Length: 228
Length: 177
View (tube, rainbow over the protein chains, first blue to last red):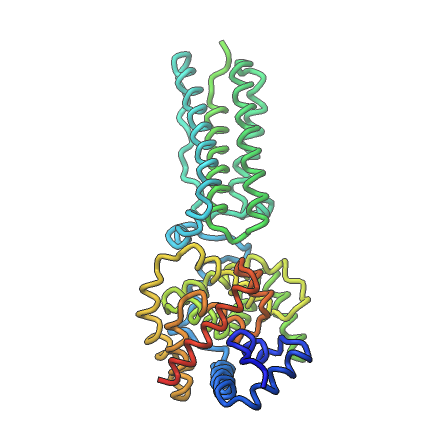
């Protein structure tokens, strides 16, 4: 009689992972060896039970309502409900998010700097403080009419900024454009990451935050006084 | 209309943004997705959360479903990835899983209607160490190959085999008690 095949080989034999010669070897041994036969029979019982487990279990409650409330016909996500549930994903992306946060802080600081610097020159017109939409739009959908609040706001403000740029202090205009380029780059990178992982709540939030920052910066820029 | 044609039409309608069509796909597949999530996570609350994640992900990725495989297979793969992703990011709950899951699985509707052997196996599976449980479920229940499991879990094939053999040994011992 050949040597006992051992646990790994016996499992491989039962799984059909041995070549014909090796399989015949193990089969002959199991046929002749009572302890290996008992071992093989016990494993077969486990496999049989596993096969009978069934592949369907109904949830304790209907989950459709929750799923339905997290999606809409344009494929948008409501951030509020996802924030709490996506803490794990945010932690997994902590380095990317930290980099994004640094950029956003930097941009916010630049905006503040512009405001402070110009506040001494002329009064600033009250900003439009309407809250931004709670439902965010994935970047790929920004051109969908009626869904693209961010895109529409950006287009409007951008046009306004171009109109006013001619009368803006050249140095200030240069700072604004430089920062727009930085935030546009951040948006493009976040878009690319989101395209690769569309359901990632952390990336969704990063894109949303980048849009909000851009809108805030544009709002402040168009409110800057003309050069004196 | 034949079943595959009906399914294809449902998928297309869902892809166009029709929620009712997606709801139909949900109702046809939720049992399989939830079973996988429950057994892999070992926690009913977590399984519900994962199941929701899976369908939200599926909705957002419908445009990438090319029909090369069945919708249920495509969805199943999303579910496996979601569970494994969650598992990698949430190792801290291991203790809770082992104490709660056995009862929850035994009380699950499918298990309630099942045989004593099946209920015993559900309990025994739930009590397996997490890595061994995941490999056992993917290989022996879901039918994935070792190289597929190794790829999904970021392990060597030798490791998934060792985990599977360990799981079977522990289950055999549990069922013989």
